[in-house]
Structures are given as structure tokens and as C-alpha cells.
Amino acid sequence: MTDSYSLLILPGDGIGPEVMAEVRKVIDWFQANRGMRFDVSEGLVGGAAYDAHGAPLSDETMAQAQAVDAVLLGAVGGPKYDNLDFSVKPERGLLRLRKEMDLFANLRPAQCFDALADFSSLKRDVVAGLDILIVRELTSGVYFGEPRGIFTENGERVGINTQRYTESEIARVARAAFDLARKRAGRVCSMEKANVMESGILWREVVQKIHDEEYADVELSHMYADNGAMQLVRNPRQFDVIVTDNLFGDILSDAAAMLTGSLGMLPSASLGAPAANGRPKALYEPVHGSAPDIAGQGKANPIACILSFAMALRYSFAEAQAADDLEAAVEKVLAEGARTADLMGPEGGTPISTSAMGDRIIAALAG
Ligand code: NAI
Ligand code: MG
Image 1: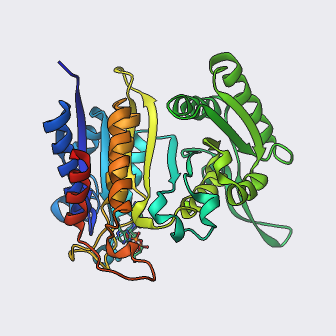
Image 2: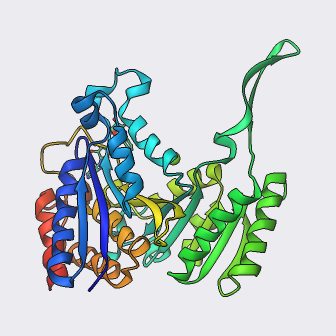
């Protein structure tokens, strides 16, 4: 008798429901063919929730998100909601989830599918086979530190933000990175600016200590974040897991993601503390938004959302084989030339629809 996995699906707005419909097919396939059991519930977030009950996330849905093993979210927002009051804007729903679930580790993979290597702005032989994971601290650091504000001093204005990290904040994201590395190639590179920032000195010390005491089996290196940026562009394949703070992680993860091409391909995860059953609080979502320009036309690429579900299989449910198989199915259909409109190269061709891409991936899983 296998364990059952509880999953809350929040499709959201725009292309969110369209790409999520394809993830549903994938979930059904794993239930029918691999003996997995998913206890799936569905809720509203963003504009869809606002339309239904005047708030971008209801207390009921928030409570459900806290109770399940994993939340899978499509995307929120759209022009229809642009003039809403700040307090009920669609993205407030997403921010509430991240904050109340205390999702302190943001995982952004940069993985290069061979068939799309020519989409990269870097040379094929630099990015082919690339598979790295950036772990960004998400709930502290300079975006949250006090004091902050714009003040007047000696007759001129001064803008202030404060980089602040406690030992426990550094330790928990370091543990998350080491745990992830154990499920991957077993290497972590920690990035900060310990040469010029005290918070960086503490960061380096704490990461090293957690490593030595709890994760000596994982290979740890340290790098200054500016050098890290250079190395990501020069030779990205040297990395497995990169762990870094909120600010550096924001920038480095966007840069790394673009090494591998299209927004329609990029998954993400945000993890919190382990629950009683050992599974971390978790929210999985594609990096892209609600794409109002193509919503409702069957043009959206569902792969970012499907790969987000693959991350859920790997990091919430410890179904590494299923995650590998799903990623391999994506690789296979791309190698066969299946392309949604966003993946059309200069050579042209005929794009396939959102649902046709989902069907191809299912067929590849089955084959
Ligand atoms: P976007 O990511 O929605 O779209 C940017 C461009 O990429 C568009 O041309 C879109 O058609 C294309 N694109 C995005 N995902 C795609 C996919 N899966 N397949 C094919 N093409 C895809 O970002 P944009 O236009 O800045 O924002 C649109 C709305 O989405 C806004 O309301 C914004 O606030 C919201 N948004 C929500 C996010 C979230 O839910 N996490 C993240 C980013 C934006
Ligand atoms: Mg960013």
C-alpha cells in the first residue's frame, strides 16, 4: 500500500488554468500507471479568487495550503485587475501563501534540454547538458532588514536598506541546500561577499559549520557572488547546487535561467520547514506569469508547469524515478521536434497547441 500525496492545485488566472489542465493529465497518468495516489483538491487564487469572493486568497484556501503536502500554482494577474487596490491585487494572494507558509528557500533550476541548446545566448558546447539548481533565501536579507526608508540627513535625502541575517536564517537555508544536493550530484557552492560585507562573513561561517557538523558527505565550496556571476556565464556546468542570499539569488537565478532559453520552460519551487511527516512546506509554480497576450488561445507552453510538478515529485514526494521519467519525456518530445509557439526558432515550422504538447508528453511517458 503506497502512501498518498496531498496536493492543492491553484490554477489562477490567464494561461494558469490552461497549463494546469496538462499537469492534471500527467497526475492522472502517474495514478493510472505507477500506482501513485494523489489526493488532489483545487482552489482559487489571484484574480479568480477576487472575482469569486473579493479577496485574492480566502482564509479557507490558506488553511488548505497549510495542511497539504504541496501546493501547485499556475499564475496570477492580468489587465482586468491592474486597477484594483493594492491590498486585493492578485499577487497579494501569492505573497500571502509564501509568507504564511514561511517558504524561505526558493529553488530555481537551470536545465538545458539538448534540443533547445541553440536558443541559449551562449554557445551550445557551454550549455549542453547544463543542470544546476540555485537556492535563494527568500524571507530575509536586504529586502526585509530594518532600518529602511528614505530619510533626510544634513539637508539631503538618503535611501537606506539593511542587509540582516541571523544565524538560524542562514542555517535553515544551508540545510535545505545540502539536503537538495544529496538528491543531486552532491555539491554545494555558497555565494556571498564575505570580502566586503559582515553579513557575508557570518553567512560563510554558518554554512561551513552546518556542513562540517551535519553534511560532511556533501562537497562544499565558497565563492564571492560577483565571481559567481562571471563563472555562471563562463562555465555554468561547474555547478550543482548554488546557495545564496535573497538579493544575490534574485539576480543570479534570473541570469542562470536565461542561460537555457524560454520563459515557458522554467519551473520553480519554494520550500519551508519540514512538517510532521518529514515533507517540507512547499509551493511549486512556473516562473512565468499569466501571459494575457496569449491566454485562451491554446498557445501556452505547459512545460514550465509540468516541470514544476516534476520538482514536486522529486522534492516533496521523494519520487525521484518518476521525476526523472517526466523530465526525460519532456526531453524526448523536444528532441522529436514538438514545439509550442514560444519555442519556434528562426527555421519556422508549425507550432502545436497547449493540449497537444501535454498529450505528446503523456505519450512519451507511456512509450
Ligand atoms: P508573463 O510571464 O505573463 O509573459 C511574458 C511574455 O512571455 C508574454 O509575451 C507571454 O505570452 C510569454 N509567456 C509567458 N509564459 C508563457 C508560456 N507558458 N508559454 C508561452 N509563452 C509564455 O509576464 P508579464 O507579461 O510581465 O505579466 C503578465 C501578468 O502576469 C501580469 O499581470 C503580471 O503581474 C503577472 N505575473 C504573474 C506572475 C506569477 O503568477 N508568479 C509572475 C510574473 C508576472
Ligand atoms: Mg527577479
